[in-house]
Image 1: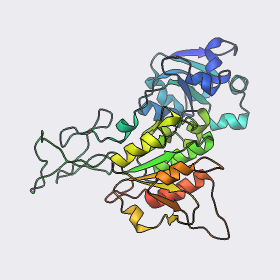
Image 2: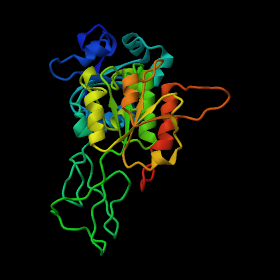
Image 3: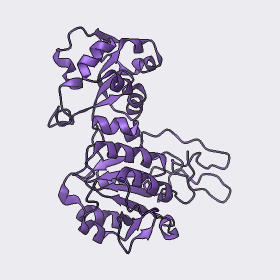
Image 4: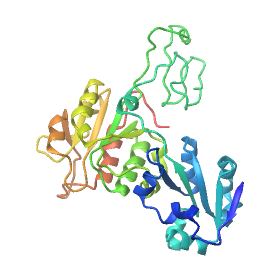
Length: 337
């Protein structure tokens, strides 16, 4: 471990943690991909599990010997800056209460390339019986040859219950994404983080953000999401011109039934059975305050709403998303896990 005890908090290596803004971190290596800051051991661990590369760590000295020390062997020879709580306070500008939210550990990490919308949606087709892609582990199988769990793809089987051949011409697989979240210009990172956490927990498969959304890897979004930004696939459309036109067209071409969450007289209740019966469903949520753009709603297949009581006509977008995901995230044949 390359430990460096911090006594001078003005050294340039620590500017990542207290003097650079989120946009500066985003463009730190421009034209290459930039950086983000992950806070707390659990969030950092989820980022490492997702394949993000650590650059340096800033942590309280006490974490060298407590439960956070389990991460140190995974950090290689990167600088591990350690300091007492008072120095950490000066470095980060956090109050002691806010510093406790980070569990006294921060990690600067490199961003990874984002998938295109096509890559986000398209199922990968490895030979039957093998895991699609290189990141997921080889699925366990029960005696009938069925894949354990609800996330990995189930191999095609012959009548005897054995996995059919290793190189079929067109392996039959479930879609990689059947429940998609679309965020249109959601600019508050707290809301973005909360929506990610609900989406991951309540059965949604992936998230698409328009170019006007807050970045999910901004520090507050990552913190509020509790690291679920590293557990659910997502991407950001490169340009405002990509939505709703080209992206909406691609979703329709991929077979998605697209629903807009909006308060209109013709809105369908989220508990309408026709919605949960859809094989592929994309749920579109709009920006705080103004909601969805008129052209977005016009291009959707349905407008949906949450039944409410006591004269209340709306919820915060993060709260509304959790209710909608609980109702609509259920997929035929899928179980929580």
